[in-house]
Amino acid sequence: MKPPAPPIFPIFRSRLTVAVLARLYVGGGECSVAELTEAAQSNSGTTAREVKRLEEAAIVRSRHVGHTKLVRANEAAPFYQPLRDLAVVVLGPAQVLGGELAKVNGVDAAAIFGSWAARMSGEPGPAPIDIDLLVIGRPDRDDLHDAVARARARLGRDVNTVVMQVKQWRSGSDPFLSELRNRPLVPVNGVRGPKELAEAQ
Image (cartoon, rainbow, N blue to C red; front, side, top):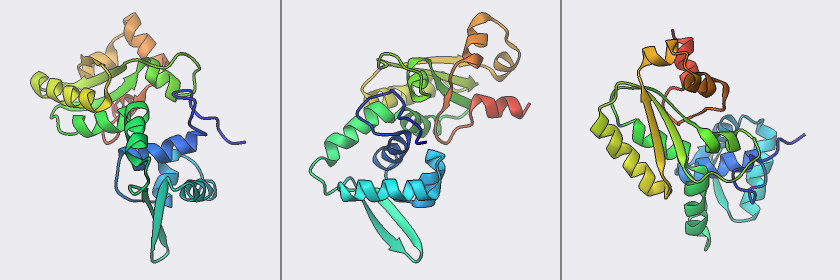
């Protein structure tokens, strides 16, 4: 049975479609089918069929290098820019924030929480208006502020940031932390997630 699409924006067909569009239209560049399969946590056959469907709709293009099929967004399509803009705003927070936070020293872990994370995890509810970001570590506040501001400009929505130290995340037991640990957390791309940080204790 095909996993349903997360209720982040109801026009997207499936969780696999969401993962492929996020990786190709937000991340950019080329990806192999194997890389898309890993990003979507799917299987190669299902991913290959989805890529073929998107190719037939001119949403993506592909080429072969040896036995490897490389896929990229179809930048020649007349709808490319509007679709890319939509993908960045709706699907892009984890990719965009990850790219910006990777430039900030002192970030030990990060994740998106709140309504956006809940919708991406499959919980029904209203579309999220803003993004809630958890940053764990000792980042330079000015650098973090600038990184979040750049992400906010790209995403076209507010980003609310909560910063705490590693010790506080690991040992804190206040109600806010307890709720965070028990609610969906979506790691940002290229930065360690809170669960990985806990396992490294």
